[in-house]
Image 1: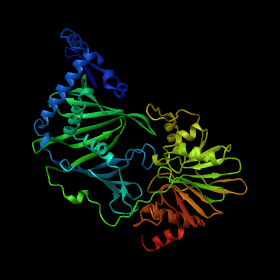
Image 2: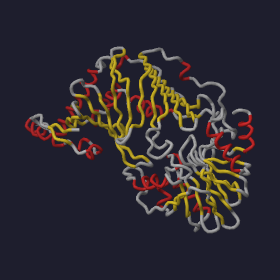
Image 3: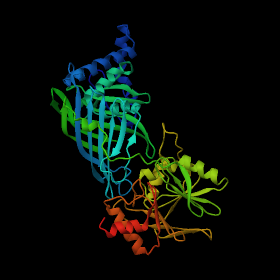
Image 4: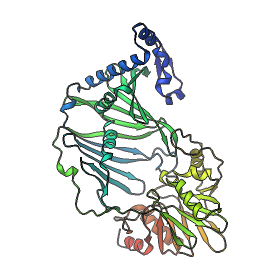
Length: 513
């Protein structure tokens, strides 16, 4: 990236500067403009504001939308792409893990109806396929294939605007419209050069706490990308970039047929537009509630004793972390989102008893997002050998937005062979599960006296407490592991949803899934 100064000269920006807000990086490019503005009786701030409006207006015109925005009555978009498994791969840092992802968006601007459907696959055979619908009077979401969830979730209508804006901000025409709707926040920040392309940079306040920097190619006036600063619960501060290419005209308007998302280090997803319809009569069925769905199953947040001194915090932000109260200390299994509340609940139930350990089954973010809270509490981390680097990475993350503690002393205990923890009465076995179709390393937790297993992602029940059908590779792997190890198991508990009897899993396997 180069910075273009007055007179056409360029200077190279250091790579580290790319993560800073562009308005700070290129202030010097506006010096001459500031002088001219003063001479003309206009302040530098006013000049940056007016120049931003001119650039966005010209960019809208280049899209062919100067006089057509009000004529768009409906929009249908279908994307197929790839999701790079950042935080959900076979091992930490394995960005070569790629799985398919699909998205469909339908908006009827006249009626106010909105539909968003996503189908994402994850390692081990999981498919998460959901549809969200908003009308002017209702909002609801449901799992389309009803593999695990049988209920219809009711959504407040107030959430429609935020979802619509988040979906449409990746369509340049609508992003520019949003910018002009908030024109008082528009600012021009100068010109930058990347390789052989010169871009003008304009920012606006997308929301109360989110500013977007838009990079508009000077020659074509097409949007190349936009960036935003975010704070990830695991990775900390990062700059997210959505980039757009392969523009094509549809009904006289330019739409990008390729979009990518990256975090400044690696690619997160890449989507290709496979179908687009402007002013298509969107079928009413897109926005109707299908039959056959019941009321949503909601697990109330509570501490539930599932064995003597073995407790599950059920329904904590949709997760079920487990903790074991040994005689002198406590071990928590899984550091899920909401771990600050989990720690509070544990300390309230066992005041004065220290949380000495937190055990992580694997590194995936839905099982580790709350790790900073346990590190702050001084807990040692029990995990697999590969996860030591991951734990250190989480601890080093810097958070400028989220109120997460960072950079605490951290000690990890690596488990690569069976590890027993006991106080003479209660025994827990931590068993390396080994490589599987979900991740390279996994820990399983077994309580021999109670004949129960606590696992993560190897088996996710339905919301009714049944084995989800059809079985996926991970389910067979769990069954074979229990059989080969000769574990006596009555009940299988998990981080996600309800417990399942081992006999139900066995019957499902025997019936062919």
